[in-house]
Length: 299
Image (tube, rainbow, N blue to C red; front, top):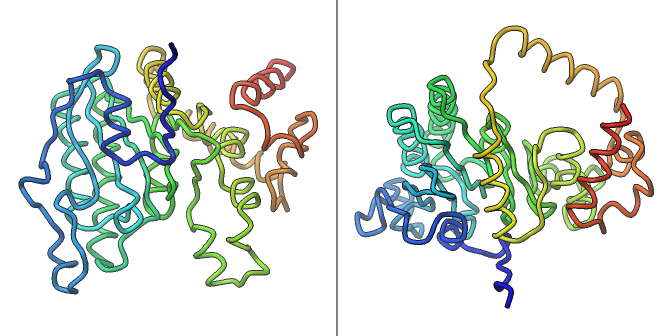
């Protein structure tokens, strides 16, 4: 009898951790019993969470030691504040010292917590610095994006710094979220209620097609675990030397030239040569990956 499917999109942060790690292997750092809550939210009489919306700890995945952080999108949209950010930064600093097989960031965040303003922005910069220090110490960092809040704002930048980005189609990645764009520019610029447009512009299939996501999986916690195991097994650290940075910049320049006025994922899929681009949203992740791989082979 097959195991019951668990939707990664609908799962809580703790349920995602439990589904990803080896049974019984997770040890939490700064657990809710310690009540490390945000002092800023308390001053505003806003609700607090005893873990400040992020679960951090150590575990094994397929027998390999990892450090893991999972943001809780159901608390303040997974937004980063001072304590929330310090927990992620501390985890990454620990990774640089202990050198586990990898750090897994289960990103589910709309960005910086507006209640905490500068403290949240500083926290994001500290996370980025700690992430790159972990990478410099030889520890790869993998982002897993498939929650209801996606990976936007500062955490969208953090995600793009990661060595691997594992996404479902339901996961979304960008700088400004659809609601923010609509608020600032108006519904004529971006209708955040048009869910199909939102996923075509920020969803996993577009990010995979553009090379911003390295692995696309179905909305299934077991699929995310399998992708994490594959990343742990096959990922090879590449030095961020000047030549590789120049190559990445050249690729971005070429992409901009290829898609100068593109406003919809359909146009990207059509330009890339995918058959029936209008049917791409209905494709299972395996079939979408197969078609992309086939195009890469032809090139």
